[in-house]
Length: 139
Image (cartoon, rainbow, N blue to C red; front, side, top):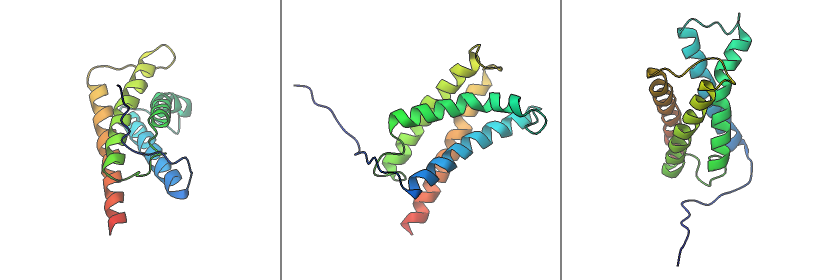
């Protein structure tokens, strides 16, 4: 007989904490992609559409994967399970963003070091802030 394994229960309610965590997560993704864009000669002020086109694949990837994975609907957003789910969701979202960015729909490419850098840096930032927030709540 087959059985399903559930690693966490879902809570469909929306509260300030869930919205706040989602806004910070999205802000980290957008901020780091824009920072990389600026580091490579982009100018978000002078070229807002180009910057939007740079950010959009990763925002789409994050929103889609986070919704499918239930990142913001779990009981524990910041505990070990929440951090693990966030890590898995970002790795998947980064791949979705990279596929979108490499497609004809968006300008830009995915040359070799870029996938490693975008996945790794945003992963460290997301997990770092989530762990810091969990530590803050535990005090």
